Length: 323
Image (cartoon, rainbow, N blue to C red):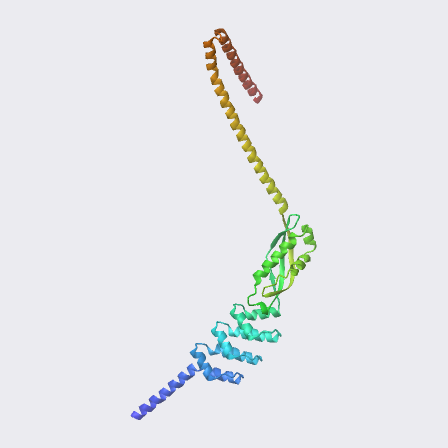
């Protein structure tokens, strides 16, 4: 009875060890790799498990590369995986480059992938160029007419400059700058409308793809529209500004004249205030007689009466005219 229990426990232990072995060691993956022509050791797969690397992420791309005729190192692929790279995408890119006769080494492709660029897309763009469409770019010719230009830039990826090279945004910015410069150097907007291909030629001659991850194949002007008359608008704004300056200076002169008038009136009032004093002094010293003083008063009263009558007459005439 005891021997049966021991033998049964031994069998269970063996079964558990076998299950544990097959769950930890990817024997099925090793068999698949072996019959696919990939020489990988069981110990290598166990090492991947211990390093927390999923063996399928390395072995399956390795099988794909081997079937495509690429000679890759499984340790290099594992190192690329541990560095945060996408092994499967890298292998697809290497296969695509091999089929298109594009010289792309594993180390170069790994560097491109780790730089954050899609290496497979880069190879595809290198084989099949892509078209980048610029937004509407406004430029002003020398005659002051604004021209709105939209261009389509055909580019091809430059594998050698993918690491450290500028992206699509730089291409668009440089093309926009070239369009603005070319239109700005044109004497009239009509010259731009008549020969839009001149913009393409001038922009291409500038070597705008220098230092970028792309090679510009062509620049095609998709649309050219005439917009506002910027020159006339600027002249109008300048005239309005000159008008405001003139009005400000006129207001300043008017204020100064008003102040001067008030100053002169103050002096007149001051002088008039001195008249009674002067007359009193003249009477006191005998330089002015009493009769002379009354004649002067009568003359002054007569003058005031005449002024009052003239004001009433003017007011009545105005009312009659209004009626």
